Image (cartoon, rainbow, N blue to C red):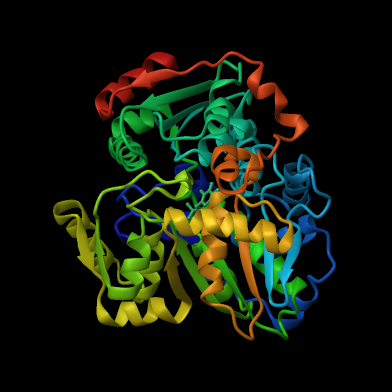
Length: 460
Ligand SMILES: *Cc1c(COP(=O)(O)O)cnc(C)c1O
């Protein structure tokens, strides 16, 4: 299995190289050359398997010869051993035809752990084998950074630098990034938005001399290995609800489009997924794009679901590439127009192709808070604001097909928003109580790629 860039001007790479690189050298994102279909009986045979074994079977065809079967299995088992729920990603029934897929039982209480705990181990295995050193540099709206730091802290051969928008992450998120004491962890508070963090990151990657000199590697949701790890729970949840005989739909609280794109891979694997509903908060560029075909930036407004306060959803490029029938030139033209004019218009054929797979909706701040309160009242479940955005949007898409809404973070990660909506302050699970005892360590950085490059060189 080889991977090609959505911009068509980077070399094709095998899994290991695509994972270690992150962003392609032409600025594009790696996608698999082809998606191997699972036969209906192979999908059916996943029923009742431990999550780890299902994960092995779903991901195995994508990794090629990067890992031997036994090595890969062991890494998967180890990755999920730290999850606090035996089912790893339990499915909870909310109503007759509406389910919640709880993805927040990992060490940092957000779904990012599902992928990050695995790719930390995949990276470590490759580094141990090759003796290489790398500098992981990531941008975060809050959860990726804490998950990356948790996955890479103290690992030999790796330094991890995380850029987060100062003042725009929750206190729990910030403390998860600033309290680890390991010398290889560097939490960088940038004066700007998440989109600024992501833009500076792309500039650092675009400087090939710098990237090669420091061994730059990316674990943002553009990293194909993260997408791949997220494909698994779309498959296992669908199987739990009767796939391949019965179709399901998913509603996905969306920011950078990585999670919902993973759902589209599950669909291409042959899992009967009727619709993938993209749920956005008031930063609704994806909803507007899917409704009108016009993708236009309007500025990010901070919300109570900060991990979705994003305007440039990197992984949307992967969906566009598929929708344009893998026409890299069309993707390059849209991305150039986004850079130059702050927007682009999706071609008509591509828009129809996107709508075959994705539906969408948005939740305002009031609707998000109301959904937190209503869910508690009607089901007894306390949900985080991102999940609430999903639940609000899902309600507009309920029908005969079972709907699974992804619960992307634990409510205790966003206690202020949950308390404001319900009067209840969700307690932090005991295993995270150390967050408030340890001193914080962070570096304030300007919104400037050259300054960031100097800092990375100095710290290595
Ligand atoms: C990252 C994140 C999202 C958005 O996921 P994407 O893959 O970026 O679309 C939603 N909710 C939470 C809690 C997150 O951390």
